Amino acid sequence: MDNTANKKFITICFVFVIALAFVGFADSTFLLAKRMSGGPIPCVLGFTGCDEVSKSPYSALFGIPLSVYGMIFYLAIGAFGILYLDTKRYIFARLLLLATTLGFLMSLYFIYVQKFLIGAFCIYCILSAIISTVLFGFGITIYKILKP
Image 1 (cartoon, helix red, strand yellow):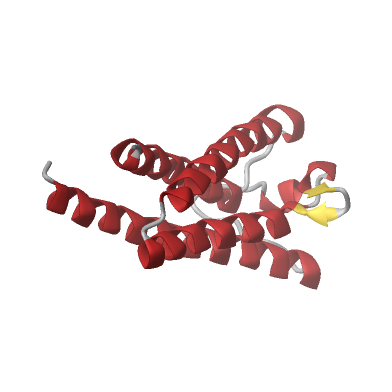
Image 2 (cartoon, one colour; image 1 turned 90 degrees about the vertical axis):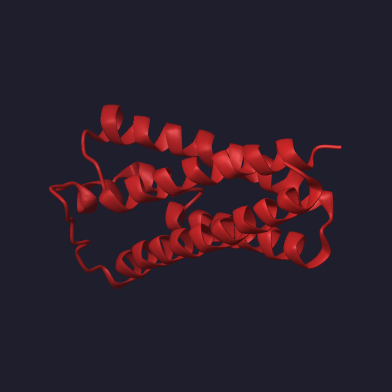
C-alpha cells in the first residue's frame, strides 16, 4: 500500500474504532441504567442469564459496577480515536493498542467468570466481549501500519 492508501485505510479504521466505542458505551450505559433502576435485564437471542450475571458478586469491582468501568473504557477508546484523527499523533495509536489489549484480556476473564464461576451468560456482556475483541484487532492493525 502506498502512503496515501495507508492514510485512508487508517482513517477508516479509526472511524470504525470510534463507532464500535460508541456501541460499547451504549451497551455499558444500558447495563448500568438497568442496575441502578433495579429492573430486570431482558435477555434476547436465547440467552437467559442476564439477571444472574448482573446480580452476581462478580458484577462489581471495589463496589463499582463493571458497567461503569466499561463506560470509561469505551469513552477512552473513542477519545483516542478522535484525538488521533484530529492530531495524527502516534501516541494515540499506542494508547489505543494498550487499552484494547487490556480490554481484550479482561473480556477473556469475564467470559471465563460467566462460564465457570457463575454458570450463566449475559448477551450484553458477550456483545461487549465481541466489541473488545474487534477493537483489539483494530488496535493491532493500526499499530503495525503506523509503527515507526
